[in-house]
Amino acid sequence: MKKILLVEDEIVVGEDIEKTLKSHGYEVVANVISGEEALEKAEKFLPDLAIMDISIEGNLSGLETAKYLHRKFDIPVIFLTAYADKQTLEHAKQAEPYGYIIKPFEERELIATIEMAFHKSDLAKKLKTSEEYARNIINSSMDMIVTFDNNLKIVEFNKMAEKTFGYEKAEILGNNIKKLFSDEREFYSIYNNTFQKGNFNFEALNKRKSGEVFQSVISSSLMRSKHGKIEGYLLILREVTELKQYEKMLRELRKAMETIRLGVTITDINGKIIYTNPADAEMHGYKVEELIGKDVRIFAPAGKKNFSSMEQIKRWKGMVRESVNVKKDGTEFPVWLISSVVKDYKGNPTSIVTTCEDISERKEMEKQLLRSERLAGIGELAAGIAHEIRNPLGNISSSAQFCLSKYDLQKEVKQYLEIILRNSQNANKIIKELLSFANPRDISLAPVQVNDIIENVIRLVRGRINEKQINIEKKLSPNLPWIPLDEKLIEQAFLNFILNAIDALDNAGNISITTKKNNKNEIEIIFI
Image (cartoon, rainbow, N blue to C red; front, side, top):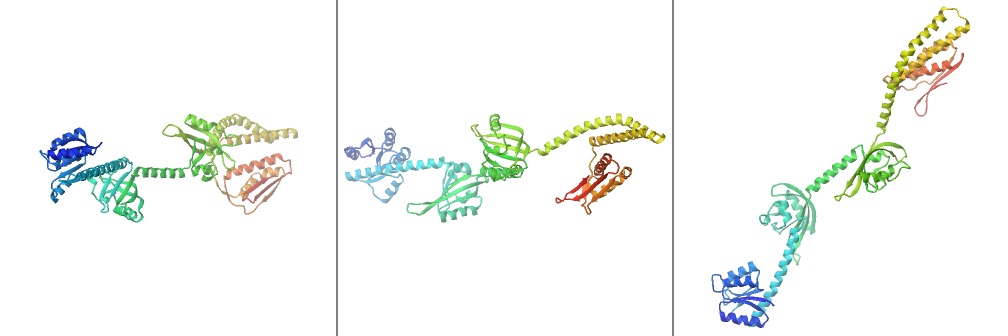
């Protein structure tokens, strides 16, 4: 049952109206004659409607009382008046009444006005609820929502817009929308495209109240009436300043990944490759696109493609290790691997990042260092041997030479002394070679002619050759190219070859020396 508050200072009229209302099923919660009483009863009973004479007793007029009821309790009001002049009607409009009845009136007129007032009140409440719902949605949005009319005046400005731009809604409403843009040209681009297309997506630079500029993505659309008339424009903005910074950082990170010489591979938790940089692909003889989607164990040599390393990485949250990887062509090479597990916000592993360094050169340097250390030890040993053996060996050699030159010896004795002398010289040569091997000198490369070096070596051993009547057969190819060599070292090598050959030959033997350039543009040197 609808509740009605009746305010009528003419008691007889009031009682008559009350009787009529009750006969039509309405509950009259109070029948009072003043504004003060009306407010008191309204607060107590919260009626659904108030019927009020504009001219009532007390300090509050009917108009003022109606304004209070509407503003404080949201109670719709129907005015009663005996006056129908324009001034009275205009004055009554200020209270936003739901109906207006001029005395005297018929019963059906009263009831019709009341029913219409209730209908309008219900519609108003539904509209208000809908507007509040829409308002809550707008203010709860994580995006900025701004509307402006056809005169470019701001009409709507939600909470996120207040927070982002730094303006209070009350101070920005009615301002020109261009105030929110750093560049008017960007605004007019959005405005014109929206007007022409109905909606438009755009990136722009906006300006806060402080003057600070920020980046945003904007979705704009036209606001039309039910008849299709353009009534304004809707902007939905999202600040992307941090996003743009992250995108820039990602671009720089990707650029770094693309240019570093260290191999970088990212796999999912099961070992499927989801990213690899060019250095890693090139290191293994692949193209980047060949590796995406492949199992990372493609890098493991045959027979070693097991899950143990992957499981250890996940269990230990990472791993640092030296290993052996295999290239696309099957070549194995040593690598230094560092793997780390990437986790989500819940701590669950999502991917594995592995850096790969080809340590072939490092391993070779380690071998050379080890060889140098061993040679240093041999050098110390050789120096000791040279010191301990060379002196007595020199005495033996000198004594043999003295006996051969001083005395007229029997042939057999002479042969034994020559054997002693020759072997003493061979032993001394071995000591020299051992010292040279243990303490190699610095190599000095310079362009040389191989044939010239061979001729020099032959001149050095000419006496030995003639003594044993050995024939040297030279097949030296003319016009050989100059090549970078250490002349002293190569000369010593050639000398060793020829001396060994001379020592191995009986009298009247042959030594053949051939030089030529093969089809690979290499110089071949053959001693036979």
